[in-house]
Image 1 (spheres, rainbow, N blue to C red):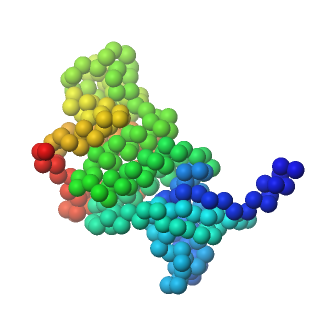
Image 2 (tube, rainbow, N blue to C red):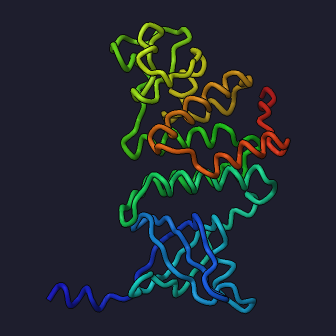
Length: 268
């Protein structure tokens, strides 16, 4: 009885963000969506590349939309879509596009299909909104990395040495990606991939992991601290994934080409 009823349910609605998309045939697209209700899923948007398509404007890359999905034999099918947030300001410059691509790529790499995580969905939309609106979205993305890892079970240890368990002193410690957190100077050699982490960077990571993370945005932070925070999180995500994301390499290329500007905000 239950299976028959389930078989009759051909349509369902989701709130979704378009993470990636690929052209299919002459007019269709395959969409990689992250949804509030069902986690990650793939669906085909038929005819969306035609100039007369009513779906096109609602399914742009990184768009936040309500989507009506029809069950298909191999792929789900987008039946209707209604735009909630277009995040058009993400396309103001190459840097914001690159950051949004990295945010989507990291989520895609760390999550599986049909595994709903409503808090992760909220984090995703908040982060895209921040990249689009903040003059300097550096810490918006760092907060996303840290909170996403925590939500998925990879929260790094930031208060005690991950090896000996002693409270961390306000000195230059090290982030040990293979061990899962910060190691004191005496224990840092246990992880050959450990990167130096000054006391200010540890404090910034703690703020980003908590609810008062906006405090970091209000402070003037130098390039050394920013580099330390970014290097620690980069080393950790690379260790967890076992590879480097292509979108991360794109960000590095933008920085080398001069399209990247990680300027500190001026004092308040």
